[in-house]
Length: 408
Image (cartoon, rainbow, N blue to C red; front, side, top):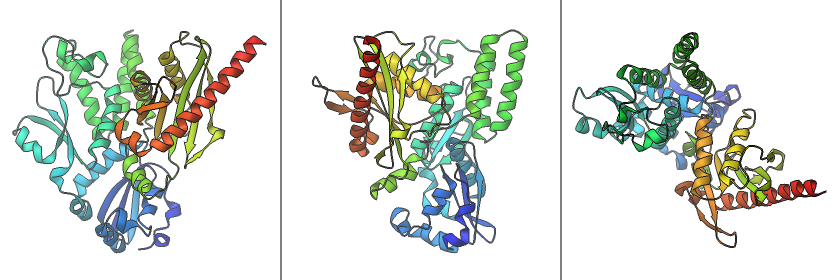
């Protein structure tokens, strides 16, 4: 079937899952950040090179197409896995051996762990009766892990690193474990966390939100305002899931290898000051391989202490991420080292957004010496250095403006 016959214009430019069908039988299910863009790629002349002859044959056999929109890319990932498991489409099963796919499991214990396990290891590592829930399979293990980072900020859980030994584990210090390791949470309270995660991975976000809203009202009624605030924040985050990077590698990296970056947005951040004074932060944007100056933004540092570069970056990131009307980045670049990278990652996670962060560390002469965050740094090194240099130039220009204004 051709692109014209599928009428690509009727497809939404939003996240979701799509179905190629023949005589109402589902041949293939896929996920996308943009259903229209992703489906359109199946009709490109290079499909056989990027996806293989098997999917070319699938497209030629299909006679209809359907789709379901989701509120976020993460929900598209979950919906795809649940639907593949339900319908077992011929070309999904053929495309990969089920044993190589990743699954999310919840163990059968007093305080169950959440683990990512390959299908081939399920029976070997976990005898019958030791698993309470299994979700998946997920074709992209990295995408699943990115999604779990988002969920874990909302609903902290125990993993393989959390041992019940009476002292806090490392994740507890980060707020990613609810304290099962140090007996800080009851079985019933932890069971509620697991219930929330199960509903989410079952694709029942609407039901989950209603439950949390009901619990929020009950907490407020008994004047447990701290718990009511926590539940309110979780509801807000669930309603505003906006992670753009969960499926990014599937959608953009094959295109990158062919020499194009379609609408790939990189944001660069830098902070400039003089002995802690006249501090200003900036955001610059590279989109589709061009600096997009209309999207540059300036931030006068107000809350961070003088000379606190990490605190200033956190302030800039918080203020930027409040603007849900601005396009979201696929990659972030910050000037600094591990502390700056962690600060940016924390701000993203707190906002319910997932995108890789690369920090550009400078030498004594302020020349780029090292890029953190491996594979993205390697694949986008030219673009990263360009964005970093532009952010530094723009930050210095803004700082001089602030300094001159105060001296005049």
